[in-house]
Each structure stands twice: as structure tokens, then as C-alpha cells.
Amino acid sequence: MENLLSAWKGCVMTDSINARWNLIVGGWGDPSYVDKLRGMVSEGVNGDGVHFIGPQFGQDKEKTYAACDCVILPSFSEGLPMVPLEAWSFRKPVALTRECNLSIGFSRHAAFEILNSVEGLRAFLGDLHAIDDARLVAMGNVARSLVESHFTWNVVATQMADVYGWLIGLRDQPPCVID
Image 1 (cartoon, rainbow, N blue to C red):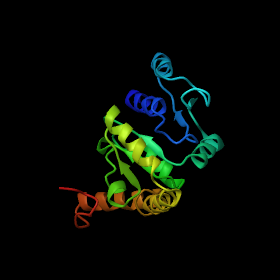
Image 2 (image 1 turned 90 degrees about the horizontal axis):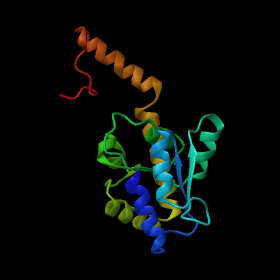
Image 3 (image 1 turned 60 degrees about the horizontal axis):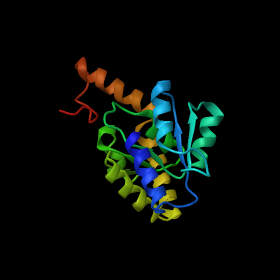
Image 4 (image 1 turned 60 degrees about the vertical axis):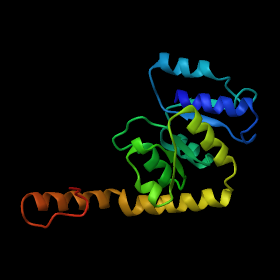
């Protein structure tokens, strides 16, 4: 998150960010870390356009996703992050690092691949500025289809049943098992 905030602040300082954009930072964290992040930027529309909104649940989360154009997850390490899957379910494109382990988003054009460095994120923000809304909407629609075809409870439960059937010798190795 520090790299994203530094990149964002750099873009704000050079006037190279869309004036209508705001960076919304959601979720929880250690209070001292959140304070450190807050100290990196000037909050609010009259500052750097950064808003810390804390954890989001239920209708608040739905409203947050509905209001955003793109979700950015510049991670150094993830197992299977839920934020991109949630964003995709709300038809939002996502910017991810390879370390998020969702390369299917890149191959299906539901996600932008980013680097988690100040320079890489600044470059992405500059590129995002040039992308028209129609492309973001199209990516969001692809993202929703991706969630429906790969990440719903029914799909995952069927895959797990196939894996268990294979493990006990009732089925061939399913395609979801990678050698």
C-alpha cells in the first residue's frame, strides 16, 4: 500500500492524474500502520484525494464497489485474495500483481497486470488515465463472467468433489489438479 500511496501522491503532485479520481483505501489493519499510511498523504478532496474508509460490509461494501471504476491490489504475496473476486462479481476490473495468483484475470482481460513498485504503479495510473470508460465496463463484464464460470460455490464444490473422487480412485485426474 505504501508504494501505491507514493505513486498516487507523485501523480497528484505532477498533475498527471484524472482530477475526478479519488483513491479509496478500504479494509482494516494495525492502527499504527494505518496511521503511517495516513501520514503519507493529505486526505480528502482538497488534499490528495485519498480517503481511508476502513472495513466495508454488506450494503456499505456494495455501495463502495458500485462507486468505483477500478480496484487496485498491489500485493507482494497472496494465497487467493477475495478482494479481486468480490470486485469482479460487481463487474469491476482489477489491477493485480502476479503475486495475487489470479493470472486467469490477465488472460481473460478482466485484470490489468501491475508491478508493486512506485514507478510501476505510477506508470499504471498514467495508463489508466488514458483508458476510456467503455473499456473498463467491458472488462467488468468479462470479470463477472469469469467469476460465474470459475469462482462460484457450485463450481468450486464440483471441483472439490472431482478431486476427492480422483483421490479415492473413482475418477480420472480432474483438470483443476495441476501436476
